[in-house]
Structure formats: structure tokens, C-alpha cells
Length: 403
Image (cartoon, rainbow, N blue to C red; front, side, top):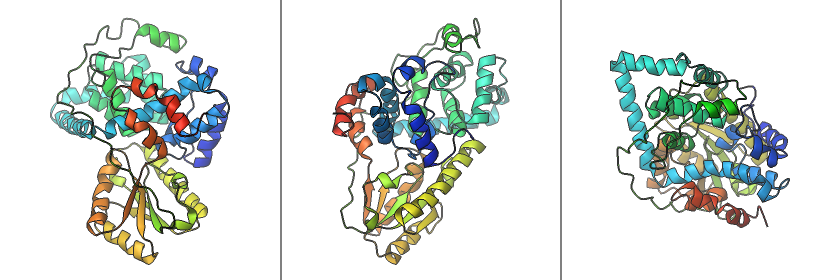
């Protein structure tokens, strides 16, 4: 975790260091392990650094054509989030499957032992075991390694993809409900029907410069899995609110977006800030991502107090009196509304939604915002990534990031 200090300043410093490499060097070296990677994902995950800031800094140093491959990778995360936003049933089915599989582990010792060996890096497959330990010890895996790992977990070890996705979410510093869940579904052939990702020994050997050569040890074929439920057509995106100039507001901040400075709300309109903490969101989270989230929140509290020059409060959303406390704060600061960057589909939203519903039922004015980046890109996440990918240049123009 020391390699990724959980502060906005550290994220911006990493962006400055990487931006010069985001062109040809990234395009040619991104799949190599080690290779050229940004290391920005934990910061983007919690929006300590925004996608728009990343794109702006990179495009200040490179043409769109030179940086296109990197910008596409940034947009993959945006695509996954937009896709899941319009199909929340996929997330809730994954959670249900996870619960069923963990119940199975409780009554099938052999099955539980197989999962435990994979998580502890004791399968006897050298590359996989090393990656398992690396994940638990650092909270990070190279993206190419994540694909290899998921393929081996599913196709070679024959373990359920849901448990692998859960293992990643417990240990990744950048664990994101959308990109993690849907990437695992993609590897096993559920996300893009009929298309499976199968790791090969030759690919691993080539891109690890011969460090690993698991010839004869990996699955040679992998029939695509079949969906166990019908995914309904995409739902329309909910309408986003906007701040009204001069309206006195209290900001509700969650770990999904720790950058309210970029919400477009003038400092003079912000009466107070409440950081909604949701300890129950990831009850089995590992020590490293837990500490990272804690440090990111602590740093954000200190930063916001200085940036907005207003009181910053914390509120555990699991407390029974949560809504009443918020209404009291609204009156205390003479504010007209609450403003929140609506959390995307995932555990945080599930915990926060009852609070927001409670406020609405008490006739409290609530502005549910959406970041301009998401507002511009998410409508194009209705089908496969290609549809969004071909719109990247026009959306970047819309956001005034390229001419």
C-alpha cells in the first residue's frame, strides 16, 4: 500500500509522472509484466483524481491519436459502470450467487478447501500462486495478470467465477463493483455471449519475459458459460439534478466520489459537508483496501475543511437516526437542500438509498448529481464496448477536452 499513498496529492503526482508515457510507450508496453502502467486506478476508483482530469492532463501532452489506447482503457471503466447502471439486476444476481456458493462451502469441505488453496496461493501452479500472494500482499495486480488469473481460476481450476470476483473485491485497492464483476463475467463468456478469454502458456511466457512458462498446465479449451437468468433490456438512466446557483446546500460525500471540489458547486453555496461512511458495505474487505479507504477518507476530511472553509461532519449510515441527524444539520446550517453525487450501482448505493428515501419522504430537497463525464459517456454503454469506443472522440469534444 505504501506505493499508493491514499491522498489526492499523491494521485495527482502519479498522474504528472505518468502522463508523459501515456502515448506510444503505453501503447507498446501496457501488456508487459512489468510494463508501462499508470497506477492511477485506486485514485480514479474513488475519484480522488477524476477521469476528466486524467484525460485533460494526458491530452495536454499527446495528440488524441497518440494517447488513444490509454484513453480507451480509462473509458473501459466508465463503460462497465454505465452498463451496470442500466442493468442493476446483474449485480444483485451476482450477490445472490455469492451467498449460495459460500453456503455451499460451509457444507462441502472439499470444495471449500479448493477455494482456500486458490486464495492462499497453494495450488502448485507457480504463476497463479505468486499472483495470489501478490494480490494479498500489495492490493494490486497488473491488468493483464488479472485476466490470466481469472482464466486460470475459472477454466483450469474449475472454480466459480463469482468466488474469484469476490476474492478480488476483498483485496484490490481499486476494487470496483462494475468493472470487477463484469470483467470476470467476460472471462467466462457471460458478458459477451459466446466469447471466452482463455489464458495460454505462450501468452504468459511472452509478456512476462519468460518468468513464467506454464506449458501443459493450463486448460486448452473453455466452452462459454450459459446465463442462468434472463438479462432484461437496459433500463433508462435516471435523470440527474443540477445545482441551482445561490441555493444553500449541504454536500453528502461518499467514498465513491471524494472530489466534491469538481461537482460544480460554488464554495459560497456550501454550508457544510457530511461524509457518509458505510462500514458495512464491504464487511469482509482485506486489511490493505480497508486501510486505504480509511486513509483516503481521513485525508479528504482534512482537505475539504480547508477547500470549502466550512464544517465537515461524518455519519455512519448504519445508525438508526441517520436521516434525523441529517435533517437537524440542514436546519442548523440554514441550508435549502442536500447535494450528493449519486453512487453508482454497488454496495455503497444499497446502503445509502434508504437514507435518501428517508429524506425524500420527509420533504427534504435533495439534488442527486451526476458527473459530466458519466453524463456524457454512460448513454453509449447500452451494448458492447465498441459502441462507446467509437464515440470517444465526439464525447471528448463535447467535454471540451479536444478541439
